Length: 218
Image (cartoon, rainbow, N blue to C red; front, top):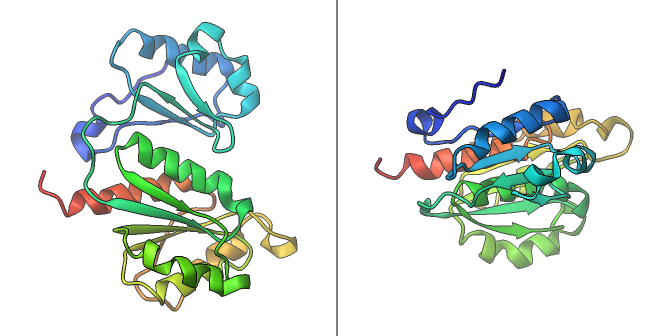
């Protein structure tokens, strides 16, 4: 029996989302049936693999806006009340795009404008330098990086914007799995950098929204 937290947005100004990774197709169909009873239902599904999406009840699946790379699906449109401010989602490499897209799709769902800045890792610092003026036009930055995750420290030393680091499981050998990236971000010498869990683009987006909403009157 699924008990949906319909009052979460009223409590914390963030609606409940559905984490699909460990849920069966039957559970997801049950959730969709329950939500279908409300004509104004608006829910984000995360970690919804292509295989699970294709196995859903077709009549229910047609109601979802599915994005394969990020493994996210949106039932209903984004939040009607827009959140002031904008967020830059920055990736070290194109291999980090699935996590970056999860963050950007979450921001879209929560009513926040965002820009995706791709492939500006430290192996070619000129790429970051070229886009730094554009990056600084944003209110909050989400930096998504795997391997040694050095990009977080570099960006943190070049801008005063609030910065949320997302370590990814991208990389060879000891970098694979994301633990090296996580520890590198946590050990960053750039002051004030905050870090979420490995591959947690959703959590980073929610943190960015909390920052933006926290400086706005309720």
